[in-house]
Image (tube, rainbow, N blue to C red; front, side, top):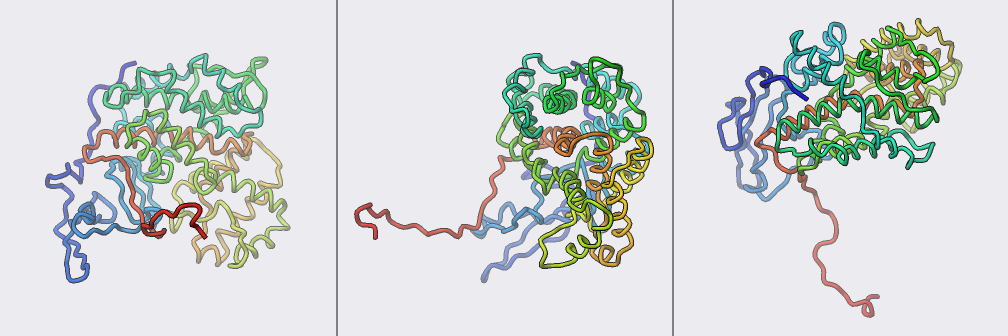
Length: 453
């Protein structure tokens, strides 16, 4: 396996090596008063986004930690890969707006961009696509792993197991100190993830595994392996192929979210790349993260019909009712999700092509109309997000809801390996070791059993 020579041209980094002057150092200083002491902290500036207070010396100088549950105000690393401005509804991959990439690019080009830092030229793209395409097969013995799962096993449970098991087959790409081995592992993960995802689906249906085809695009090949059968020819619809490619592109990376942070944290210990990505898949499985589109479809099923929507809207507005409208609003995007606009138009094309009559789609359309017009939703900024539209598209294409998060993992793999490679190459990186605010019992002496009351 050969790779493009040299690293792509990156913008000048805003943060330098530990102990050296940083390019992004601001003239500002943050001052912290602790009792009668005043501590001065450095401030760093990124190329865009909020400034960052350097608190690394805080414990050394004060004996104190910071307290930030969920790390919502903490920058855990320096990164040049993805930037989000939640207030403005901006998502950039290596500086490129997601809307431009969705309109003018494709997933393979986006993969190259995330890994190498720049868009490829024609020669680089052709070579990259070929390398990915010709490594989509998995070791034949890996097929036997699937027989160890129950037939009704959740496909995400299967994915956590089989992706982690790749380390047992590809020993020549687990040395994280070797840049070449790291890149081989990255290519393998991107190439083989669609094959494993399709196998997880086929196993649940009892159908035979379908081998990949080298004459198909990345998205078309995945659809072929998922829905094709040996006894007849499966023709991939260009509309569905494009929709699948867009879903992959829009989910490729999303800054330091839960699963990406999990991959980085696992990688900081020196774990092999396959184990790190398996850890990311496990984190993504949660309904608050990658399972959101699955939860959205379940909600639509609970509502059932258009005439019941007012009842659930009323419940959503009631503070004392635990019911939540899934697929609306976003923890990061406070105005709108830039990915949702792309998915909205794509959903129209997919539904028009397939001509499916399903009550859930009518419920979804009416919910969308209300969310865009109702003052409560507008005031609360509860706009349909990418999960709302992607769930509708995937259901229309024939994917069962339990496969939705698997597709998310498939798409996010390139972001995970890009972030993992960046983390391994960062000289400032240390093993992740968050601290805590301890509220348990202070030190106490052991009491013998016969003397305890």
